[in-house]
Length: 384
Image 1 (cartoon, rainbow, N blue to C red):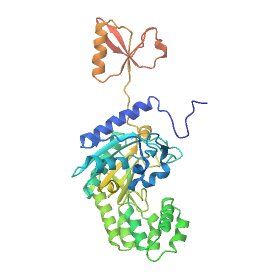
Image 2 (cartoon, rainbow, N blue to C red):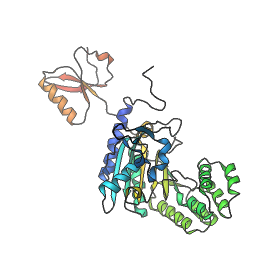
Image 3 (spheres, one colour):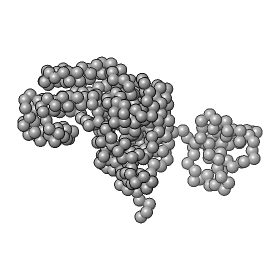
Image 4 (cartoon, rainbow, N blue to C red):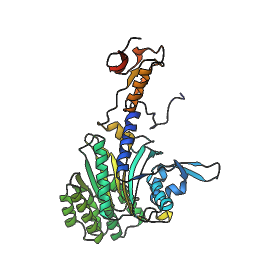
């Protein structure tokens, strides 16, 4: 059965392809109008470039192959963000703030979930060169504009900060294996196993880590966290950043999730995930990853977000596709030719029927019919 595709790969058929393309154009225009410049990195790179620094967590998700020209190992990108960081640090080398955006297919060796594709279409925006909260606020607002344009005016954003767990693990003097184990348990919300491991850690840090899964809810969680967590400067700073973000973007409904360590080895500050009604998994992810680009010779503060365009198009209720107009086969009719050209210039889709093509098999709802010396649009299907 040579027509079958590998698991979690699929063809994109019309009208889904039309919805994806309509959203791609709209979102890229939203980016462009806000000063984000588009970059288009290659699908393949040398593996060490894709996995250096911030990209190391992508190792198990990256397809690898040998380059027959150089003999070196290549990787098929599993995330475009490390590539964009390389472009900012090594190729553009702008002295100030740089706003970049991107859109393209990525490949995963394993699906992110049972229903996920292994070939997402990643679209996103990044701000490089600004370490303050103003850049995070701009990214959060931009993500909100994108989701609203896709038909999701109501959504929720979970805010977290990986600096909390990092500060507690360092203060507790954890070795790397223990930290990795705790990270996995928190990520999986495995509270019983977490209780056993935290009991072996020095006070008050083990107890504080055990409290993180319960520190979830509205902005009042931040006050509870300030009372219940150790008064470490890093923790106080992280809580202050989260409170400032929630106040600065009142148009977004925020929840606080201090156990959200998504991208722990990649991000080093605020992290966020956007959720839309009726869908349990996050529709968009982002956060801060200062120092990105260091491995390419230029460390830069950075913040950004991305989402899977295929998943967004599948869920989005607001994508309305235009109905096509069917024109009869009359290649020598000047009036018809002019009418078709005018309609296409106005953005209408006009398909010219081939000679002897059976109109009974066609799915168009609007048609061009003769009217005097000209042509008009009608909803009545013409005779064969």
